[in-house]
Image (tube, rainbow, N blue to C red; front, side):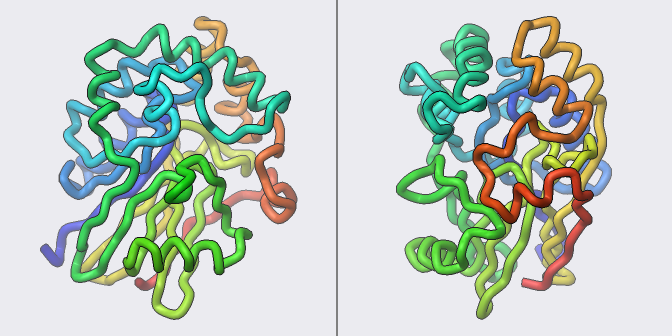
Length: 269
């Protein structure tokens, strides 16, 4: 329907407090579960993997598999996040990923096994594809500074007008020659801009505009739960400071933006 909004987000990362707040926002704006799309990594760094999965499933929204869901479903030994071996991120994953493995029920592992790694939908006459990172490599990091050529290749491969992607953790929206790439950001961790805010996207078919928006939630409770469960202290601090412990995965352009406040963005599709 023309007056029905759509909501997109990624990376809930086991952050129960954040996803509870997002549902409140969706309910306030009367955005129905069938119009909500999660780009994967339901599970991640924070303290409530099982509870977050249950919340997502009970909410009834659309979900694709992120690399964490794929790895958990396969019983893999690591998160498959594409971190360089020996990096700080890789070392931190040796704490949070085994924790998640011990907390996620067999029922929810079976649910993960049924998730697709991408989804296509026609919304308001426009062809959308929802992916996690890349297509062949769902752990591929694609940032705003990533050359458009790479994005165009994926858009062409999927034969769509709009790609909504996740994984990189920093929101952005780009348009080129009538095609659009959207990363609505993640809700489980801040976007490295020095604020506790987390990010999502809303598409309004009436105005035909895509908006990247932020919200605040109870980050203190989420952070305290990580400390109590002996999860990486550096990540628990990030929830409070809004700054990543390191910029290992970031290109130079995004590294230079650490601590710079991100503003909401709107763009016509």
